Amino acid sequence: EAPENMAGASTTNEDAPRIAARPRLAVRRSAPHYEGAIVACSKLGLWREAFRIYEEAAESKDGPSAQMAQASTGAARKHRRTVTDNMILGLVRAAVRGSKSLEMKSKDVEYRREPLDKVSNLLLNLEKLHGIPLDAMHVNPVAAAYQKLGLPKEAADLIQACLADRKTHVEMGKTALNVNDVQAKDRESYGILVRGGVADGDWAAAVDALSQMTEAGMYPTERQMTYWNETAEKREGRWPRRRCSKKRREQLWLQYCSRQSPVQEGPSSASNLASEMPSASTSTD
Image (cartoon, rainbow, N blue to C red; front, top):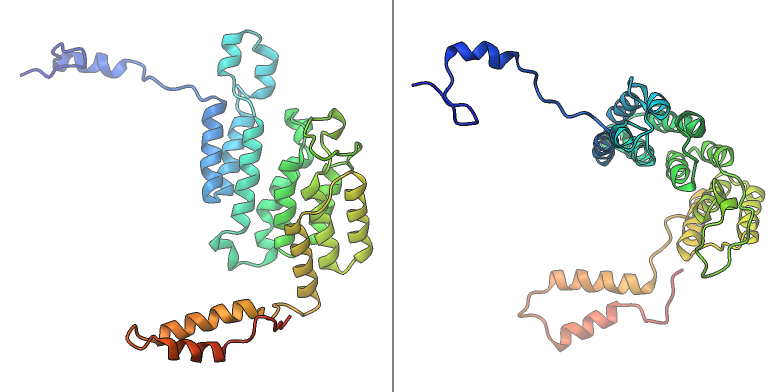
């Protein structure tokens, strides 16, 4: 019995060469396809694969430069392949996660900084290559990853090379975009510079970055100040700090409950626990 094709008509062996000769349908790759692939790689920290996909999108014969010159109609622009801002953000995430992956943790710093160096070179030439203006959201994650590897100088150099000082004063409660603040440092950028100065013991650089931050109308958050204090304590050998009395009481309570059975619990056991705990007014900081 002759097999049937998708349309329901029967086919014979004589039709096989004709069917095989038909052109195969293929989906033309466009920017959303490249974006989706790069974002998937970034979630897994596959930075080499992410850069390979980016290079394919940037260097293809239908790439951005050729299409920007040829595509003028709406239909052509719909299918053109361009390097988009989402692709760059995906590359940044892939490089940052790649430098912190389990595979990298067993390597030395020079090996772990390779993905960060690669994406930094791209960011320094981003506007020239693809016409995409740099923003703090591109630079800050890479600079923070440099600091995580113990490279505060590289982090500061990247921020200073890519982002200018903020020219306008930020007023509290206002979020309107000012064109003068494009490619400028934000709160996190200044915070990274302050922490780099603290980590290096360069207090003059840290104070200078903090003063620039406040002059621009931005002030450090509680999280940033805690981070700076921890960095200073680690540098001076005063980390980790001793636990406060509240945490010690909680730890004693958990230890006591783990030792006791439900039958033994009672007023006497509670009084014994109270005698073991430090008073609430006692501080060990």
